[in-house]
Length: 379
Image (cartoon, rainbow, N blue to C red; front, side, top):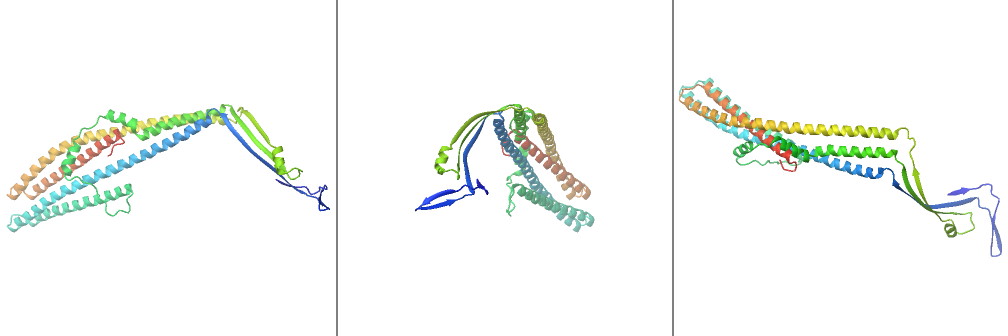
């Protein structure tokens, strides 16, 4: 620190080589040097609980991140199953198109011999065009699903993006759709123990307990130890700086006790807030468990229902295929008209579509059940 005394009259005289020099200094300098330390011995475990609360917050953030990752996986699985469904739908429509092309060629021949009118041939041509449109529409939907999948995977700079499709997609996925469905309660119990959203809700309760302990610590006394080392110097002293630092050296050690008496109800308010926070955390955990049960139960019901639909659709497709084959033969012999043939074709396509939809919905539902039962497993 620098100081200034404007009205000082005292002077300092020095003798050098027989010459006396008088000097009046109105400016002076003081220096203080010290080290202080304080250690909280006990404050109701507030510091310890604060560290614990930060660790719980880190763990909860990790669980929340894992929950987001699982939701992303579910979206990817849904899109992948949709692509498989559309791919097989394209195959079905191509088979239907081949049949329509044959019927159209047959109709042209029958028109030439006078066994079919131009109006009937036009209906066969329209049916063939409809199958071509269905193929293009399904391919467009595949492209859209792939684009959405690329966005989820953040592959924006990839021009070529191919999806693995099993060679015998129909037979392979038929077996998956007929796989056994896990028990509902087993899946739920496993999910409760492994799902990160449940763990996050449980950590929220632990965090609220620690927050409550921190709030209650405000009612506790604080015990601390303090120590200090210090010295000082001044330009007004006749001694040297080193002599002053040595002479003025001082050390101290003390024990402090702080007892809270009145804090404007801050501690009581903090405790009440912590209690409400814990109750809210308990309700959030219950909501998470109910939502988890509802989600798993929904997948289980859908899997059971769609699997039954798939079995029924398999029999329906076989029946409609046999009926349509017979209609085609009878149409060639002139025993059935164009309306009956097209009606049989429409019934066959509807049965095939119902089979595809029920099959892939069953596959998705079963995969989701397995995934909820083991979150670490791949979809």
